[in-house]
Image 1 (cartoon, chains in turn cyan, brown):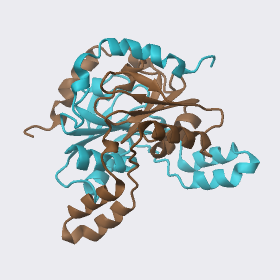
Image 2 (cartoon, one colour; image 1 turned 90 degrees about the horizontal axis):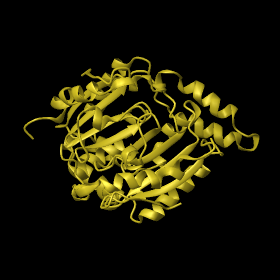
Image 3 (cartoon, rainbow over the protein chains, first blue to last red; image 1 turned 90 degrees about the vertical axis):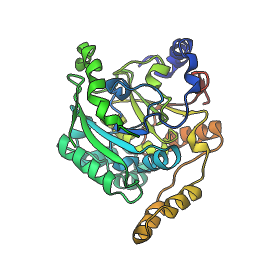
Image 4 (tube, rainbow over the protein chains, first blue to last red; image 1 turned 180 degrees about the vertical axis):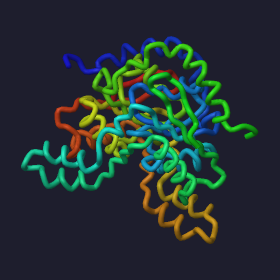
Length: 174
Length: 174
C-alpha cells in the first residue's frame, strides 16, 4: 500500500459534515429500542440493509456477528440505554467458515519471533475465535445463548437472521 | 412498544435489494486493508462519516469503541483477511462516560430474582464494562494497547480519533 486509508479520513469526512444538518439533535437511546449484532464484514451496512436510519439502533459488530462476544455491549445497551429487542445476524460467504481455532492459533504461533514466542503462545491459547460452519445452526445457538443468559433481560424480544451477500436479502432463521 | 422493530426488517430490506446492483461481486477482504473500531452508538455511521463505501473496511463496533474488547476480531481481520491498518474511534456524548463498572454490577444484582441471584452476581462480577471518562486519554490508551499487543502485527498502522456527534466532524487524537 502506498497510502494509508486514514490520510483520507478528514477529506472524506468533510463531505459528510456538509449534509449533517440536524442529526446533532438525535438522542443517545436508540429510537427503536433495538440492538443489532452482526459481522464486521466490509460488505455489511445493516442500517441500510434493513431500511433503518441513524438513531434507530445500537449496532454491535465483530468477527462473525457473535452474541457470545457481545455480552458486555448488550448489557450496557439494555440497562443504560433502554433497548429491549436484540436481532442477531450472520451472513453468507463469511470468513468465519474458513478456519478453526486450532488452525489460527498455530498460524499466530508460527509467525511469532523467538524472543516473544512464549507470550504469543499463551495469548493465542487464551482466545476462542468462535468460528462456525453451519450458518443457520449458529444463528439458532446464538439466539438461544442470548435468551438464556442470566444478565440479559427476560422480556427481551430476540430474533436470528441471515444476510445474503450475493443478493442483499435478509432471511429470518428464528 | 406496540410493535417490535424486526417485524419491519423484511419490508425495509426490499427497498435495499432493489438498488443492490453488483454489490454481490465485492470481495471478502476489505479493499482498503483497513479495520475500524468504533462505538455501537445509534448515531454512528462510520462508513458514511469517513467518506468510505461498502467493501472498504472491517467495521468492529461495541460499547465505547473498545479495542480491548476487539482483539479476537482484529486478529481474524489481520491474519485471515489481510488488513494492515487499524483506526480506533471514540465519540463525544458517549454512554460509557455515564457510569462505572461497580455501579452497573450493583444494578444488575439489584434486579435479579432471588432464585437466580447467585448466578447473576457471579456473572456480573466477571465482566469489566470498560467505561471511561476522558475521551482523548482513552483513545490514546486504546492505540497503545493495540500497538503493544503480542498478537497484533507489528507493521500495523494504528491511529486514534474522536467523532463529534454534535457536528459530524472527526478529529485525530493520535
